[in-house]
Image 1 (tube, rainbow, N blue to C red):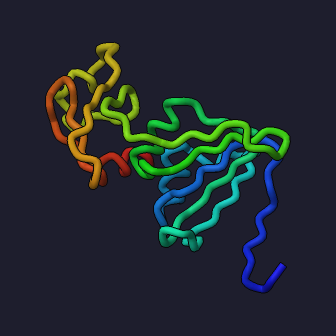
Image 2: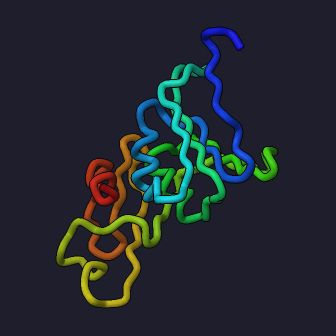
Length: 153
């Protein structure tokens, strides 16, 4: 190993999120509600890559579901999700910004029906991907990226 190599221990089973925009790994962890006690998380930030700089997140003994991948698309729409089993990549998926978000984002309009006692799941449509802007299905309120990120703090 040369003095400039980054050495990170491989994980036996779990998930690696690669190609996160530089300095956004902490937001990805926040939106996923990680780290939790008992979850081993490895974080690499501002790692040099062919296209500039990126962040990488690894967590052991946990695989992401589709809702969590949709959440990641709000922070890192070009990220790659690698599922690791027995130290091998068994699945590799590209995160894609979805056109419809169900039950992930809360409407910022306190009078929206999705914020009442009615059993209605929030539903948003993508208006703009950079920066993220979504529109509520019920009241048509536009919700901006910073309002979305604040919901996961």
